[in-house]
Image 1 (tube, rainbow, N blue to C red):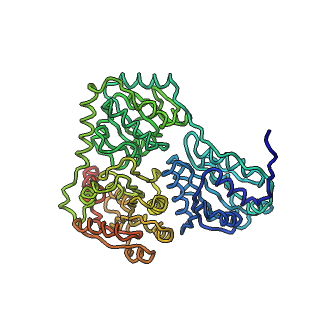
Image 2: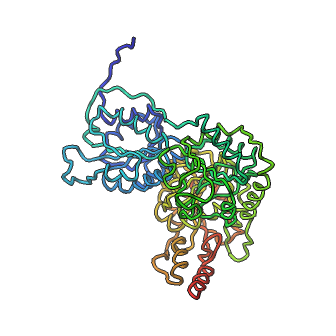
Image 3: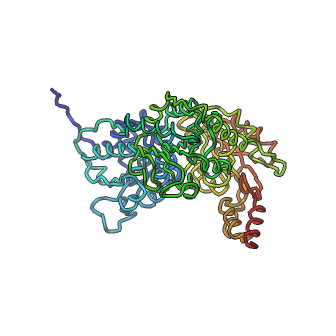
Length: 565
């Protein structure tokens, strides 16, 4: 018989913090606000078990929490105040939704008795976040905090992971209540049935030119090792979706590239030649399908198997020949030791695709540019630790990392798949603080750095030591590329001037220097690693070299030829 347990009276803020600890949370990222003072006060009592990191901007805090979710597979916790604070943090929620990242955003809210009066900073967060969060709600009764928080952790991590937003009225947080705690949560995932596994194996075994496409979230080091073992045993070529290149070691003889913004033309051609596409974990969104052109919805020409953790996503855009609702980790575990007996048939196909990838990622000539980051990164990549974490911003500059670096677990590539500028620096700060023994590299453009570079101060405060590689070409490069393609030589709104990034970084507590020549990069990089501080290397690149595959001059010439045709 269960003994009677005395339940002590606690404020809503104390109950909430106790639930965070019960569910295994040990870190949160915030910008403090008066609307959730009771939570901040309750956290003061558990500093031995919980780390609160105050960022310089709510968008930075949200991006840090989203990064934590990517790295750990558990919900990243972000705390912001009402109104403007929540609006600033919305970008992190959008990223978490599109990237399928577990995250919980806790928003301080106005007092309950002032609702619907347009009180100071009042916003209806259910309406605001409903379309971009997996669940958006408000806790009006402090006695229900354990119920809501347990559900929040389960929703954020079960099925297709995603963000949960919880509004916390400030007067609810001060209410004293007597309530029991919830049990620690456990996520619910779709399992792979024997019948589904047999059907999957049959589909693959019947193909002449199969191609595996891996992506999405929920991949552990163990599951990536298992799916790699399956691919290598059977000699099946493997590609990854946009910014998920760490699922399979890029030096594996089965790895053939990624479908994203830096995809080799040969990979698109090889995809068209495949007679079976086996998609595991990827959502088949716009970036991975080149705006839905490499696969035409709803019925792609190539036979399609789609394995995804959420049944509602299967068939949402593309109608598969076989759809299976299952988590990537359990699929990888089931396939890891399977030998379909077709490796001799598929070997030449796999070798050709891997060879195309290796050729495409060879060091470029580099003679045309004072600073060629393709050359610099190919010189650097073999010396990087295996567990290096690379964070990416939005923009063409990320093409150099995506094309020329090698990824694979335990290393990580952390980037927003929704194209959010200002993501990389906060992501690198969070990654460096969370994993202080690992090398963390941030790739960011001059435009993106101006949006969130101030978070280097957060790194300095909490002992993070990311190295920020800042590509400075004086323009919003991706938008200039599109301008020159569609409206050549009609420059409007894409020029950036007047920033001294070295002084800015030094003022934020970072080591900083400027590099203008390829030959100087390696030494500058070593000085940054040795500095023992956050570091920034400003890379002054030629705007003419607009991407790894083209130049502004070539774009203008193509536009002229199109106009003359």
